Length: 205
Image (cartoon, rainbow, N blue to C red; front, side):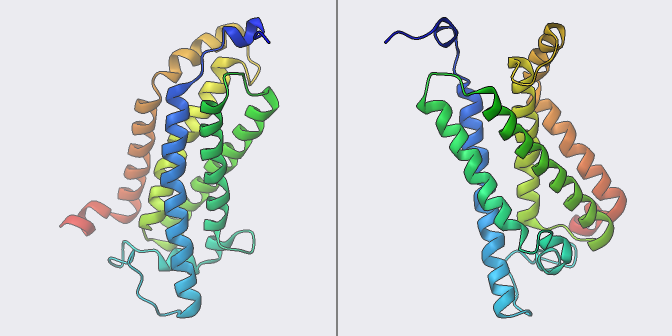
């Protein structure tokens, strides 16, 4: 059975697939470690977690806060499910040469947007309410941000999210700048953390 013209001209996004698998694995590991730490706290509220390094850097405060269980269960459980889905999408891109359906990409993109919204909320909470930097949380932030940019810009440039052709050309160019956009995003978070927590002085001086 021969492939359709659309499938024949389709170029599998190998770089995106590799990125999703790697980012998903890192995010899954961070969520897993947070889940294990939450179990430790449930068994012993005074447990000293391996991620607790100082008053500034630690996980306990985040895990014990109401913000750490927004839906009535620990947030890391969302991470375990979400990053498993991310790995599955990455593997799926390797497993088939046909295009994923538009609805599939849009559904995945909605999930990525929700993940970023949650991360922005948790970053804001950590910096302005809890006044602490959670190591495993920061790993999650570090992979969620580029995942959002990579998936969203890919869908915009490929037309999975319908936009005019001129806009697609713009997003096609922007897609190649995902690493730089990610670094700028990290820098914004670092500057906000410095303004709010003075983390450079407190961590290194």
